Structures are given as structure tokens and as C-alpha cells.
Image 1: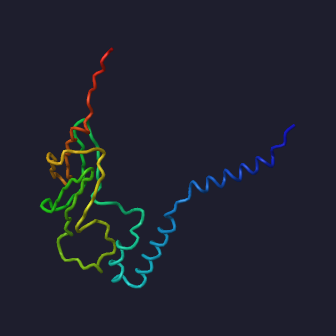
Image 2 (image 1 turned 180 degrees about the vertical axis):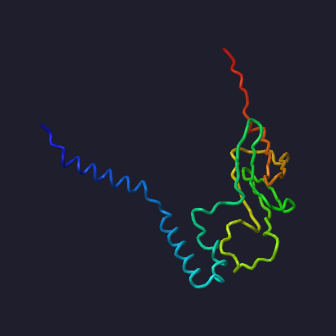
Image 3 (image 1 turned 60 degrees about the vertical axis):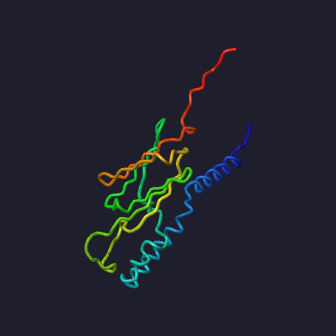
Length: 172
């Protein structure tokens, strides 16, 4: 007869600790701090809150702008950048090595709204820059872009060395 009750309890304790570690989020403390700072500025007065609302610890919900989809086929890499309301004349698109950089400006809504009038300001406005690592080398001289219905679509033809090649096998 083998007695495993002591070992079994230790294994259960270890299993419980491992599960706690798996649920642990290192950003929970920062998110709580950001929330407390927001509440402190709102208590002091709404006139102070807008200056710090997005500048200090934007939180886990913050995303890079513009949001993108990146995909490819045999010959081309495609980047779709969601940029509704952006000024197409302000777009600057550049490729350096395997990095695509998109920049531009999304103007504020028309009208003079004072910052202290906002109770909530979630829509991004202002200048933006986003750099995206590309999966392969592209031919920088053949890059094309179009903007339609708030979507910036960039076509980046793959360089010849990045395209798949058929290699024939010789039988000896």
C-alpha cells in the first residue's frame, strides 16, 4: 500500500499557485494607477483633466492609430490602414528596408470646442505616425497607395529575391 496523500496535497498547492501565476497580469497595477490618476484629476476639476487624459498612462485599451491589416500573396504585401476622417493630402508613405511608415493628420471635428467642455474624448485627432515591420523585402520603387471610404490601401510589390522561386531538380 502506497500513501500519497501528503504528496497529493503538495501537488494541489503547486497547481493552485501555477494557476494564479497564469492569471496574473503585470499591467493590472498600471491600469489601476491610471484609473486613480484620472479620478484625481476629475475631482480637482475638469479643466485640468483634458491635458492629462491621453498623455499619462493611456491604458491597455489604447491602440496605435491607424489600425491596420497586413497580408500578402505570392507577389505583393498589402497594408490596409483604417483612417476615416484623415486628410488624404497629409499622407506621407515611406519604405526603408523592411519597414513601412505611414504618417498624416486627422483634423478635429469642425467647430471650436474648448478642451474643458469635453466629458469624454475617445476619437483620435491630430498628427499620427505608424511604423510597420514588413514580412519580406519589397520593391520600394513600385509601391502604390489609394485612399477610399476612410481606408488607405498600400500595395507593396515583393522584391525579386523575396518571391518564391521554382527550383528544378536534376536526376543524376
